[in-house]
Amino acid sequence: MTATAPTTVPTIVPTIVPNTVHAGVGDDPDALAGIYRDEVNLAVWQRQPDPSLAAEARWLLADQGFNGLKLTLPTARLASFDRFLPGLESCPRLRADLHLLSDMFSCLFDLQCVGLRLGALTSAMCPKFHVDRVTCRLICTYTGAGTEWLPNHSVDRGKLGVASGGLDDAASGLYPSPRAIQQLAAGDVALLKGEAWQGNEGAGLVHRSPAVETGQPRLLLTLDAM
Ligand SMILES: [Fe+2]
Image (cartoon, rainbow, N blue to C red):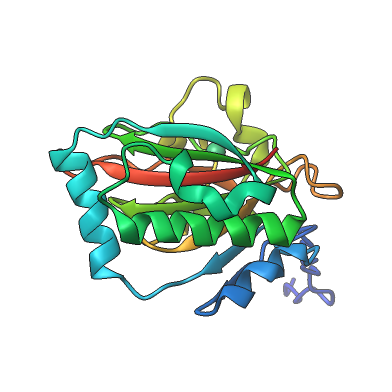
């Protein structure tokens, strides 16, 4: 008896991933407006490294013992921004950039107040991949390693949080390969769309703090809507 070839070929059905991430990336501040697109959960303004800005950030951490700043800024009073920033008197470039980004963030979302945190980090603040329960957060790392993130199509969200079973990210099956991990650069301005953005439930950007190398602390800005 002669075997015959099957007459039908199994059909491969493509998997459609809802709200597949598209990181809106550009070298112009207008790239940040891309966050309003439904299919985008990360918008990045990639900036050329600014040596004076990075130098001020390193000086602040290394020589001044800066240990962080947290405040709520009324957007109507951004013109008097400087007096809200104790400890940064000798960092004009950094003050100007904080002012610029706070102003852009408040304009983009028509905010009355901005929650500003400038953190001096010597260890990973949030070392496991997670999503934020916010509408949208702006982050910028002035010196040190940038935030790590995963594209939607590389994430098994069933392994996030307690569903990881206590396993670390590399062992939980959250992502298929370490090559899936993306990383922002120092100086980049990023908008991370969170779970509280209407219509983005279950699609918040998955991200984590990077490991901090000895002697290379991070100066990290986060801005939140208040
Ligand atoms: Fe986070």
